[in-house]
Length: 350
Ligand code: KG4
Ligand code: ZN
Image (cartoon, rainbow, N blue to C red):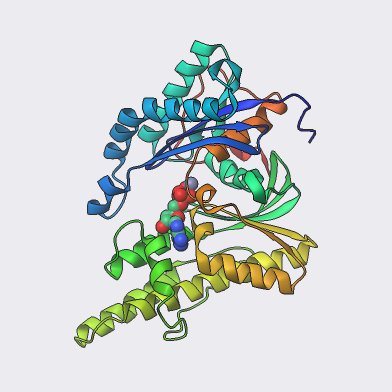
């Protein structure tokens, strides 16, 4: 797709889960500001995100976060709210109450400044994180999207068209990380904690199963059950739990499966560029193994900068830019959806 010749500034807003985020992005790629107010401290004691708390915290934070994103962009480049070309906002999938806070704010702002509103699918936005900053990539490419709520292997034909090759039969990769972390006594969010401990453990201490499901599909229930069984047996025998070894062995199993399937998909389809997206793309083991095996197989590997892997609004603004270039804007009747909406699915081929 031709990205257009005129500079376009998009304000992105993201409130689908427990991060209130806003960002100004130029032409879908150059990040002028990226403000993220994390709510992790309010949810950690419950072991996961409490939707009602998330919505209330978004309401408290959204005004400040958007203002800071606009102020930072203005300080950096002199670009003020009068130069914003559109307001892009995540309208699904995610926690419905949380989504509605960002969506309502975006509607009011778009109406107030007289600029188009653009609803953005959160999963597309994660893919668009690959267009941001120094590590920008251009379609077509294979993309492994691994987040807290989603695991998919997609072929990205162009900026707005994707082909789903496979997905998870059960838990998302991040969800499996969070559940195992909880079982071994690590706080929410579990992914970064398991990743950190893995570096100290022996990845071969336990051999957890690598699920063999459809060619490009994933299943994490087997590895999860196997880790839980191991923990139960150790506890029944009153033996100490080797937390670092379990973390490292679990990570090894998950990373092996993700890496192997993504690379196999590239080989089968003759695709020479592979990108990662979503919160689990921040995982150090996944990044390094993917890089090593891509190198070995002659595949060009891309991964977003760490800050653009987990939830942020720059990726939403980037996606909004490509939708604006394609003339895809929304009315003030735009709604929020907790799961993937049929309108979004029509983007997918296959
Ligand atoms: O994309 P994201 O921020 O939110 C969703 O859209 O779900 O992903 C959050 C998920 C959580 O499950 C978190 O544990 C996981 O990403 N995560 C990680 C790492 N950093 C975040 N998982 C493994 N290793 C990490 N370093
Ligand atoms: Zn996300």
